[in-house]
Image (tube, rainbow, N blue to C red; front, side, top):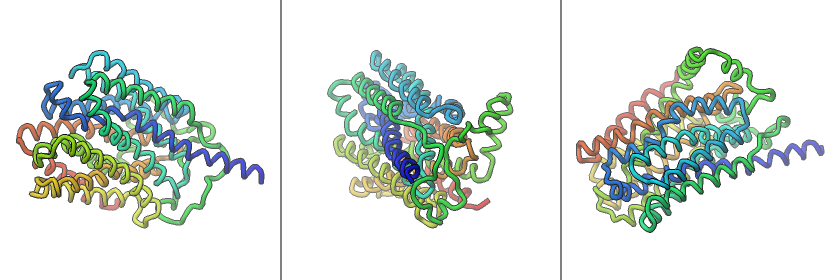
Length: 429
């Protein structure tokens, strides 16, 4: 009996793990999430257009295209504490170096290096939380953890524009470095792996979110599948990962993720500019609206993921509902509703809730669809494919707006792409 109490007490530490993983996510993405809020300042100070602004947003996402699969493999073989902590430290050091010589080209290089470090934070934090929580609570826990990114955006939108106005770009970079360093130290000091023995605490309801699923976590003696793959030639490993992506459940996860991450990118690069140029909203109210959008995104990641724990439709259907809602919101922005601040502002908050909140149930579904002992690798693969859209979407949408002089083609393109993906992924294999 004392052993049971001891095991239960050990499992209570999962709330500490959830808190530190959420904080590290928010801290590591703090500066990059603030770029959209500082878009007007960056365009003025660096004398850049919307296309170049989109490139800044994409720069931090380029190296994760390669780094995420590598990070996934590392996470399946090594302790998340050091893999995630080292990545967050790289983010901090790169931003600190950037504060010494700010400029557009140098800022691009800094964000490239920061993206390499962030490659471990995203899948590592997701894997650490998934391994500590039973499926009956995993959606809520993953939603809270994934809310760290928009929460970092909320804090960045509330602080960085004012800091840039008062002290300049150097101060924002150094602030971002200190925040990222705090996240790295917190994870390395507080994270530990779940107990090797003992059941997950709490009942497992007989709902679709938990039926037929097993706990996500490291194998007791190290995942054999990950170790076997690491001994294969590079071409064989690449082929094995491609076969994983072609599996029908994983293909649906990847397609829906690519579409919705493009919507998320569009919200980041276009929201502030749309409000300033189309609705003629002032700088102060625009910043407040962007904070509200990020806050709605954080709330969406928690609420939608918790709903996927309890709701009958399941996690994938929850993502499909987000796609429908986001498409409706973007179509509305192309109508006269997008020209009035009274209607455009609520539409952007709506888009924040569904267009950012979708990630909570999506990443939980991806983690639970992974083969045993391959959670890190699977998450890394799915997130790496998402990176293609994260890299391409911001500059492409910015270029489309620059060429046409209108936001309608950009919102229209995202609406068509999301609706098409919805039609494909809604079909059961």
